[in-house]
Image 1 (cartoon, one colour):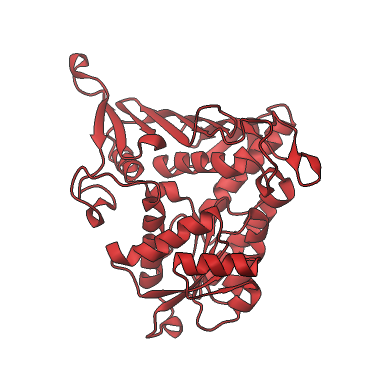
Image 2 (tube, one colour):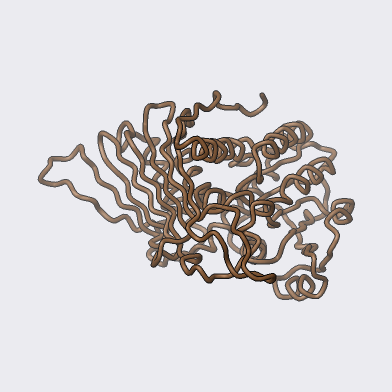
Length: 390
């Protein structure tokens, strides 16, 4: 139940930290969510960024009442109840833990942190805060793709039987050109890792989300194809990976292969998932976000074949809030669904999903992939699953 001392008659005040790519996506979701879903009342209070002029312009453009440059001062404000963190990874732990300590509900973009130690500390802080009714969630937005929500339902219902293996590949090409310039995403001290944390984390989370399972063994390899890129001071060293490959063993006995690359020429933003069970299979590609391929192997062989499900019916996850049947939705809607679920959890006093513990589970796999790669793809055993409240 919600902490009665935290309930007020006024709308919840929201602060968003970061206004670049993810800040824009989250701002769009905050601006639209109440128009399509029944959620607790809230106000877009303040957008926070380092550049005064830049953040002020973004706040005006994205619908925030005001802007600020000092996130610590924002956390001290009594009119702020929710903190949405879209800053670079190296800032996640400090901001999130300070916000939780200040009694603010926290949403933080994935991956949870830059290091396993930071993620463990964040998860522990979230458990302690939850005892006082303070909620927290990590932003794996692809859990909110209706087609993947349907896939999870079909797997849970046993429609494809026992899952044997999964193939997950998240491929982009924005770094395929070796002359693409340096950015904070290519520096370990800021980003933590490259394709591993940026996009492989999504693929790993989908394996966990779809199967409702946990990972027990990891073998992996990372590689940097372009080691130096043009920067402000000439050519600068790239200190993160360009691509990653991993094999994951799950407690159920299923095996998952995960591949991620930001140098896959011709692939713009393709998250492909293939789930193979003993009674059927499922196929998904983010670039066809509204479609799910489903093969039912229980029908006679002469009738078998993948059929295309257009996931745009009111009976499908989230779709009832949007358009008539067949009118597709887009990538940006996943963030609206994410904000909807986060607000609903705050309103009901229930723990949102994915929790910081879920984010920690992914972080353990990311760390194991790096450890395995450093040891020439050695097999890394993961500790037993951390349960919330432990």
